[in-house]
Amino acid sequence: MENKKRQRSEEMTESQAKKKQILDKVTDSSSLLPVSALLTAEEEDFRVIVGTYERLLYGLNVNWIQEKTKLRLEPIFIIPAHTGCIRTVSVGGHFLASGSSDEIIRLYDVKKRKEYGSLGGHHSGDITDIKFHGKYMLSASEDHTINLWRTKDWEYLKTLKGHKAKVNSMAIHPTGKIALSVGTDRCAIVWNLMTGKKASINKLGRDEGMIVLWNTTGDKYAIMFDKKINVYNVSDAQVATTMSHTSKFHTIKYFVLNDEEYLISGHEDKIIRIWNLSGECIKEIKGHKLRVKALTVIKCDERTLCASASSDGVVKCWDLESIVQSESKDEFECLGEYDTKCRITCIDAHNKFS
Picture 1 (cartoon, rainbow, N blue to C red):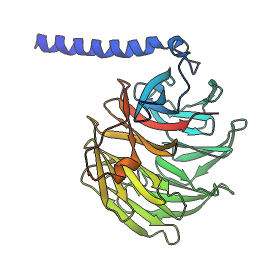
Picture 2 (picture 1 turned 135 degrees about the vertical axis):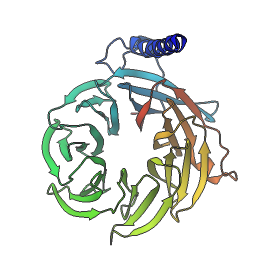
Picture 3 (picture 1 turned 45 degrees about the vertical axis):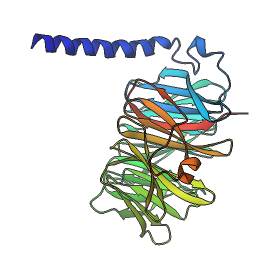
Picture 4 (picture 1 turned 30 degrees about the vertical axis):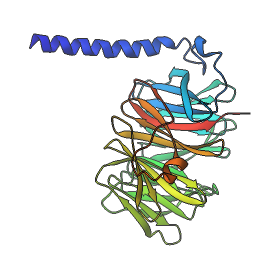
């Protein structure tokens, strides 16, 4: 018994030591370039932003190497951004925002590489989702509300009230005129962003919507549940397609290749799946050691890439076009990876600024 206790305490000490090593790298938590050794890092082709359970915000510079056959991922900043677990990260234009269980939104300018400060006092619960559109930002919370902000001066404009429980996810229509949100109250709410009022409430039945997304043209939207994705027509709010799987869904994104639209999903069984809009799973990407917690899609040098993040702390990058066009169904090589040694909760990406 004593040996087991000793082993456990030693393991905890090793884990704490690893976290301390990461935190010791950070010489100035208010700077987007806190690690002096990284000040001379080359300009990135694109950047991946990762939030973690350990409260650390990672910025990974991603560069093409080996004649654009591989990607190198290197940290350009590691910031202890919050006092609680980071729940969501979002990039809009040159702004980066992170939301946390500490009820605070931290703001950065990724182009000028400086911190703006934080937005607090308007939510009384975990920040669950943040979305940008044009000059505005929306933040959703466990406190049942969505707040509207103006990015020019970070003025708080309005609170959207309609959900009776935690808001899990939001999506802003490509026109910016309406938004959708889903929550633990098993409802999907359509918001008129021109008036700041709810336009309609649709009950989702017994299942709780975890993520909501508009497709690229804005004539359909997808809602992710535990074991399925429903794609709805905007015209009548009826289900057009369903993608189902026995392994729990954790994350989804839309992407387009050669004018054809697809959905990509991350699962509890460590696999990333690509679906066509007929509801068929056409590819399975294996490579993570634990559940695929988050993923994002980015266009770089006319190539459509996916950055996936697992609870094992590893970020991996994939070429979606070569995977979709491949004759194989489930054997693909990743372009590059980086181990954060943290429990990743969320991810986003942005292209380099000219």
